[in-house]
Structures are given as C-alpha cells and as structure tokens.
Length: 306
Image 1 (cartoon, one colour):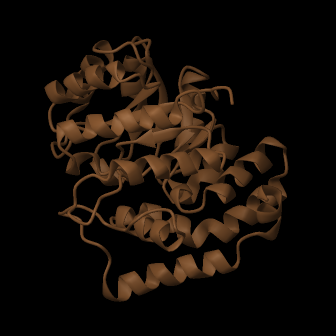
Image 2 (cartoon, rainbow, N blue to C red):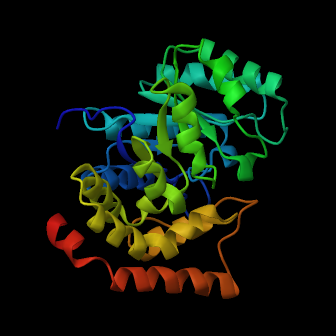
C-alpha cells in the first residue's frame, strides 16, 4: 500500500487505550490504529481530544507517537495533536513529535488559559517556527473558548507551514467564509461530526472524526460516495449515522466514543480521571444509540466492505 495523501479523506481522532491499572496499553493502542487502517481510513489523528492528550505524561505521549508511527508507516499519514498548558511546552513537544517521524501536527490553543488574538498568534507562530512539519490548526470555539478569527488567519498566512484548519465550529458558514477570504491558502478539514457532511459539501477536503473509531467502514463509505458524486448515498449514510454523530458535540464525547468502541469490539471504554466512564441514564442512552446503529447499518456499506 502506498502512502495516502495528507489532508484528504477520513482521519479518525483515534483513542489511547488503557490497561486495567490505567497505564497506557500500547499493544491495544497499536491494534486500534492498525484496525482503523485496515478498514480503509486515510490518516490518523493521535493525541487529540479523543486521544486524551492532556491526561498523559510526556513520556507516555512519546510512546504513543512511536506506536502510531509504526502502525501508519508506509500506509497512512499520522498527525499528532499538540495540546499543552504553555507555549514553551508546546514548542518542546512539537520538536519531539517531528523527531518521531510523523507526517504533520494538529496544534491547539494553549489549554485552560483563554488568549487574546495577539497571544494566540504568538502561540501558533512559535510552535510553527519550532518545526518543519506541516501544521493544521484546531478551531473549536465551544471547547476551547476562543475563535481562530478571519483576521487571525490573515496574520498567519505569512507562516508557510501552517497549511490546514480543523474546523469544529458548529456554524457551517465558517467553511464558506474561510474559502471566500483565503481561497485555497488553507486546506479545510471538517472537524465536528454532526456538521461533517455540510462541511465536506462546502469545500472541506477531509474529515477528522470521533465516531469513525467505532464505525470506520461507514465513514469511509460516506466519503467515497461524496467523491463519486453520489450525494443520495452520502445522505443515506449520514442520516443513519447522525444520532451517534451528535455525541461528538457533547462534553462527554471521549467516554461516549470509547464506550461505542468497546461495544463494537474495537477497544476499551477505560478513561483517565478527571473523566469517568459513563454511568446511569447517560450510559444507557449511549448504549441504546450504539445498539440501534449496529442493528441498522446501511446494507450497501456492509456489502461493499465485504
């Protein structure tokens, strides 16, 4: 298999797997990556939100990167999240991530602190200048309480290796606004599962998806349908998928996605504190959604994948 092209197709926001003692289970994590690749995804995002980046110690992050690079090498591009509490730590991690042989970085705003536009510009600039890797910025205003505005993107055009945006704003108008303002200067990736089809139709080149970790074949089939111009098939898959895709927009998305993975035989629901596995009514609700989706999977998708 030849290496697939960066920033196109389906990129699952892959999870990090934990053992019963809550240590990182590198073997299970590697198997998860390999299973996604075998099911046809076009790239991997590791150590993002679903990868529980901020719940890992620095040596653990580097171990996950090593495993991810080994799984993806020669097959798909592997992109690492850069999610740190300070700019200095983000710069240091970006350098280590490049040394591990990955294809690209997904850079988040510094965690916890809500920056001004000048501060956010400096954060992104310093991380970008610390590496030669291509960078995708992660815009997620509901989660990180800051918007990567058009004026900020204008300032960032001078930094050549900032090349893509994971757009997770719930407002699908952002895709058109960014394209109108910058043309093809930035590659757009749909980043919020329950507005992903809208983003792809409006010009996103790929999809960074949480629920793909549980249902990869359906995600790949949706993208293939779009690429083939079969909008009816893409809509069919999307409408089937939507009850699950809404989970990606909730605060407990990581627990929900990992529970879905466990139910589909693709991993464990174990998460590190401060997250806790779902309980009570919420757990029952998510389980019901997954069970319904598994029973009603689009037959054409399954027959095509067989």
